[in-house]
Length: 391
Image 1 (cartoon, helix red, strand yellow):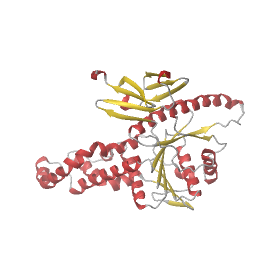
Image 2 (cartoon, rainbow, N blue to C red):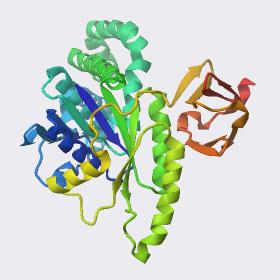
Image 3 (cartoon, rainbow, N blue to C red):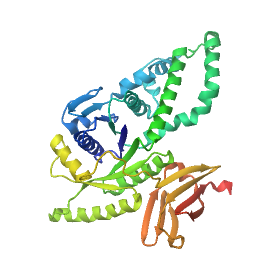
Image 4 (cartoon, rainbow, N blue to C red):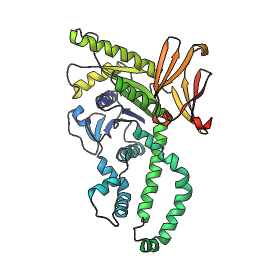
């Protein structure tokens, strides 16, 4: 099975790119599901049809679905949410605000992704293409099981037994509800499902993540940050798709300035993401809605290529923990050490290799640290980030 996730800043057109990829995948004979986990669904609008919380067959080999995040929360977090609501309102008035507080930021998106785990296990589809919410941080939430592993495997089973044994007594003494066995089992089940989901999304032979950008400054900065963020958690970004590029054959004077601006930012995109393959989708003369336009978009982006094959399976950059420090490692083949210069300006890491410049927007994880040292060996630039107090 292949799983492809499209992410990017809101409004860049990732839904259209995801739908176009799915249409071409289905035409090439792969049983394909395109699914939206974005609460602000627009997949149905892109396909020009009504979608539901279950896969709807659109044409041969193609299904589509808009996941109902509220339904997924009720299914996967309902008992826990009910318990927290009872806990928060033990001595207060129950209202909808309290209920909303029991769903943590990103929880809805995360639980929506667990539906993908279900489809993966069923083996019903050959390819699943996901139109994600407009941020890569949802995927970072999949690191929670990794952080909670020791607690969940060592302490949680003991805590479950203790609560089941003394829960009724503690509840009468403390005057607050204690979690039931069902609540604890639901937390346990979600933890293991998320852990399994993380392993699937980290499997480079199965899952690819593609970042959709527009040739605009703010969008590129967000994409750079997402790219580094995704590398921290070792997800494979196998392609960048630049959407809404004004075609060269557009000669109207009004667009000349915009074409010049886009040309500059297209160069920035190449500098930022090399060696990740970059694909381009033009700004069409009409909306990308319906099968005809989605077919046109797919043909422009992928030409004669297979849209679902893995486009890149290296680690262009990665971040690893080294004691109290972090090491940012960047693959730089064919470079000579004497040609490399390195500077940091705010959240921007500027690397020059001869006449080539590469800007990396640092994720929040590294913003509180400064560069301590750097080494270039075996075609890899390694940069140590650490706190001044460790000096």
